[in-house]
Length: 429
Image 1 (tube, rainbow, N blue to C red):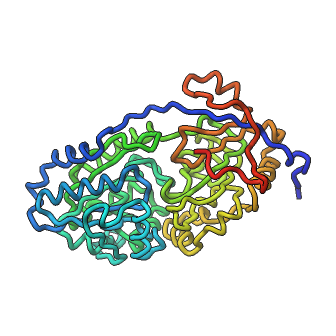
Image 2 (spheres, one colour):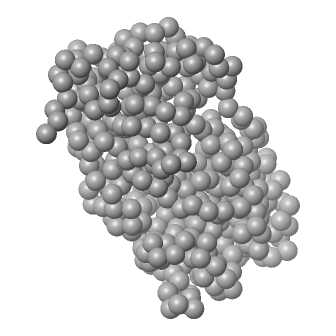
Image 3 (cartoon, rainbow, N blue to C red):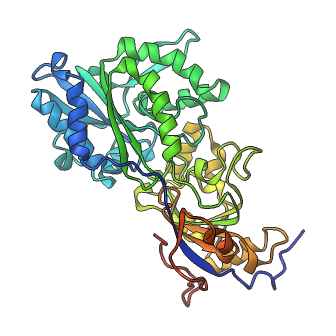
C-alpha cells in the first residue's frame, strides 16, 4: 500500500484571489419581462375566469424564483383565474409532500410570498402508456386543473447529454411525474437516451394533459436572470434546443482547465442536480475523471459541507474524493439515497474519505496528486459550482493569471487562512 509521505503533507500552496469576467447578459426588470412575455401569449383567449391554473415550482435555486412565480400568479389572477403552485421535483424533498413544501419554503416560495395556495402531493394519474408499455405519470393536482403553466430554468443537465437536457420538458416528465414517474423515467434513460424518452412520452403529455404555457428562464454566469421567454406547449421542443445553446455559452466556468485539487465550500440540490455541477468540474460521464475531450480536468475534489437549502441531501458527494466529516454529519441518508435510487446515479451518494478539519483533509489530498510538491500544487478554491465570479487560486497559476485580460487579480499571494482549530473560513464568496 502506497502511503503519502508525511513530509510532503505538511506544506500548502499560497493562494491569491481573482475575479473572472464573463459574458453576462441580464434582465434588469425581471417582473416586467415576465409580464411582457406572458402577455405575448394572449392567455385570456384560453384561460377563463374562475378556472384553476397549476403553476410548477421546482427544487433548484433559480435566481429571483419567488418573485418570478409571484408575477406569474398576479398575471393569472388578472385574467380572473385561480392559480396554485404544484411542487414539480420528482423524489426531492425526501420524497414526501411535506418535505417538498418545506424545500420550496427554503427558496422563499411560501403561500404568503407568491400569493396563492401550494398543493403538494405525491399522488399521480397514469395518463396512458407508451408504445413500449411504460406508464406515463402526471401529478394529480396538475392533471385535474383546467390549465398547467410550467416554469423552469433551461441549462445543461448533470447527467443527460443531448439537444435537450434540463428545462421545461424535463420538469414535465421527472418533476410532475413525482416519485413514481421520475423513477421509471430514469430507469428508461439507462436503457435509451433522453431524446428517445421525450419521443415516447411528450406526445402523450401534449395530448392528455391540460398544458397551456411554459416560462423558460436562462441564467448568466453570475447566477442572474439573463433571459425569460414564454412559450406555447407546441414550441417547447424546438425552442428548448435553442435556449440550451445559450445556456451552455453563459454557464459559469473555472478560470483554468486543469487542477490538481479543487476545494469546494458547499454542495447542494439548490446548486445542481448532482450537488456540484459536473459540467463545471468535468465529471459528467465519469465520477472521478474527465473523459478524453471533457474539460476541466481535475485530479482531486475536496468538499467542506452542504448548503442549508439542501436539507441534508448530499447527492454529489460521490464525485469528490475527500470531504470534511461535518458533511457526513449534515447528511440525511434517507433523502440522499432516495434521490440517487430514483435517478439511477447510485455512485453520487457514495461517501468520500472524510477528515475532521480542513488542514487534515487538504494535507492528505495534496499528498495524492502525483509528483507535484504540495506548495507547487494547482489548487482552486470555490464557494460552489454556481458562484464562480471570484475564485481563490494557488500561486502555480499566478503567471498565467497575470497574462489574462479576463482575470483581475484581487489580492497578493498569502497563506491559506487556517484558524487555530485547522479550519478555513466558512466561504470564499
